[in-house]
Amino acid sequence: MTLQRNSIVRLVLTAASAAALGVSLCAASGPVRVIFDTDMGNDVDDALALGILHALESRGEAKLLAVTVTKDNPYAAALVDVIDTFYRRGEIPIGMVKQGKTPNESPMIRVPCERKNPDGSLVYPRRMALGAAPDAVAVLRQVLSHEDDASVTLVQVGFSTNLARLLDSRADAISSLTGMQLAAQKVRLLVTMAGHFPPSEPEYNVATDIPSAQKLFAAWPSPVVFSGFEIGQALLFPARSIEQDFSWVRDHPVVDAYRNYMHMPYDRPTWDLTAALYAVRPEAGYFSLSPKGTVRVDEKGNTLFTASADGKHRYLILNEAAKARTLEALILLASQPR
Ligand SMILES: [Ca+2]
Image (cartoon, rainbow, N blue to C red; front, side, top):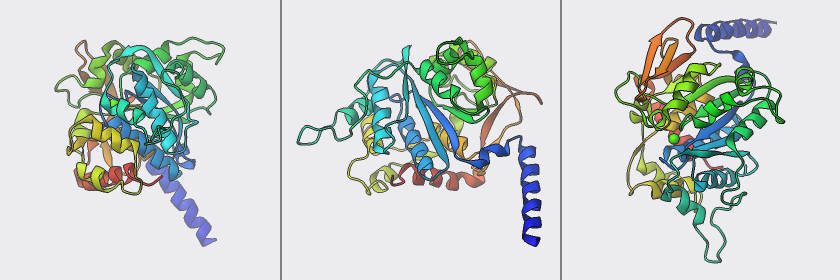
């Protein structure tokens, strides 16, 4: 009886504190259902972030529903395929932008995909042939249409191309709902690595596709949390971890991507990693949150925040006291054995 009463009291307190934070307790009832939208290949943090989402899925905290790509180079989707397959989840749908930004190739995505064993087989097998990934908007519509209402967390760590096009999409054979309706019904939270708070100069993900970012942040119907440039910049992923913490396996595609992105050893900001971590563990205290408000993207790609009680946008604020703990979590998850 006493135990039961304690449980009820605890539940009420938890509900009260969740309400104060403006979050739903529904998310705590199972793994966070995630769609990861990435410009894999423009920087190595996308690869580390995808590894972290897989580690969180292995721990029962997340479920990767799909990965969609905004970098318009076939090796971008191929490296996603390689990483998913490495973590033994090669069945995860992958969608590819068409006529998208940054079509340039980069060693970070090409080299791991092409590495061969002495017998000629690929070091990192993958599921799809190069260039075979279906259209990202179709994948987003397909996956969202099969999910429960208010159940999906979107993590966007590249340009806004795919999600802006999703909003523009009409009812079709996949779903009788428009893209806007799918976003409003199915998505509970969009977490994006985008912008600067306060603005100093246009941030890469926003500046690369300004019209899409303007559309997305003006029209997206669910709450949005931004991880600004300054967050990842303050938490550097150490080269030391790449060199020491992945020795449980001889070949790791994220390590290969890291070694082929820049000349080792280098520490790299954890931009996309912070968005992935917050999306799955929003209540872990790694970051503080700004008040509610609205982020407007100007014609140069600056992100201008105006506080308002009914605003849907918030941005992460670095929690100085939690910095060491947050970086440790990122390192442990990125290097966690599969
Ligand atoms: Ca990125």
